[in-house]
Image (cartoon, rainbow, N blue to C red; front, side, top):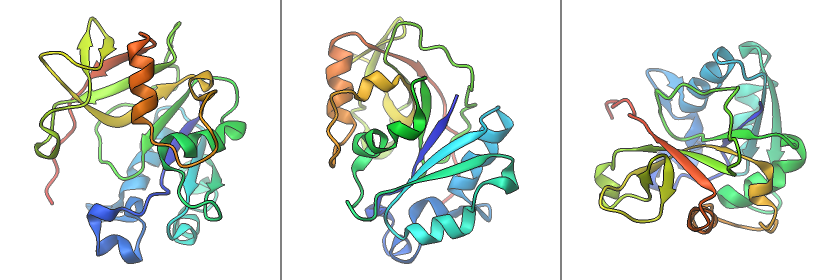
Length: 206
């Protein structure tokens, strides 16, 4: 299974830090957020990683190179000319690299203790979301769960962590333009095409 790390955004909430450094290169315990992902992906059997870039793209490519250092092959999906395409648009652009099999997507600017699974089975569904307890900035949550089936609304809500497994056909109707993932997910959830797992995310200081 291939993995994609979303790293093209400007990181507006992290300004002024993200004015001079892409958000995925901000460090936790002296290690960039994106490197935490790459190390764990490598440890869990992922050998090919696609990273989309736009904002300060050269800093990401210069820092990570081709991935040899971590025993992986990194391929970049460059969005500099189009401008960051947001989550769904960025994945759509990278589909030709991701191929025809299900793949993992993780936001490059999060810190997580989730164990990525390179043999994850989507079965007959189009997406599997990793959900977490609602943080202070998203108290209302994003989705609910009913026996692993994701719902748009229920009494107990969870927040989408930015980690998910997708089948390529999930993005078949997405146009190659700026496209957020949330509306597409909500439509698929309504059609009972999405399953989910609640997880804990490790708390980190600062």
